[in-house]
Length: 258
Image (tube, rainbow, N blue to C red; front, side, top):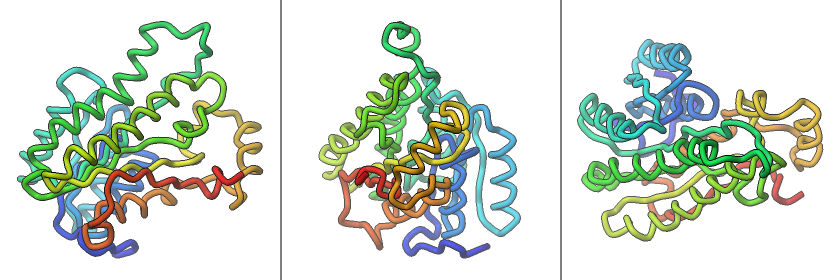
């Protein structure tokens, strides 16, 4: 197995990454596998990428499986958690990465169907996955890592108000769950990426917008998915972050300083 990002305390741990077939999720799943974790990769539309990733991990001597599901649908987060535990016998780390803006809609165009779609994917799926994972994580003193966004702090750009608000919910929910689950030994944190050049921004941001954003970032570049992975590994490792909970780690190249 490759050891490019070998992080202590992760060998043999079982990690479920939702939305793990591409982008940040794929980089995170790859990073956990490189550190000896056993990985369940959830995907929805990106089955080909998830299968390719799992096959690559397996070929290098690691353990990885794929489950496909619409995580925003009723009952699917519970099914995904159950499949992970059935496959590996336990669950140590839940990464709630699945999410999307769904579309850019200004206030006058927002209707209840759109609100439900955004919240089902970015909010309700996180709540249901955490609830389903809790009894399993309590037996291993595991951890939950949610994914917020820089837009939770800034409000995002025009047309992203519902998504930004949903990610603000995730940040607050993370802190609430850190309080609530601490007595069971479960740590709950979040990673808040800045502008990461993945399909997300290729779909929802114009090249001109991204260039203006890049110029305002102190490090003068957009992030790659791999720039985010280390923060997830750190937060999952009891060796490195066993006394860290309720935190939202900002990964944005200094973008909030600008």
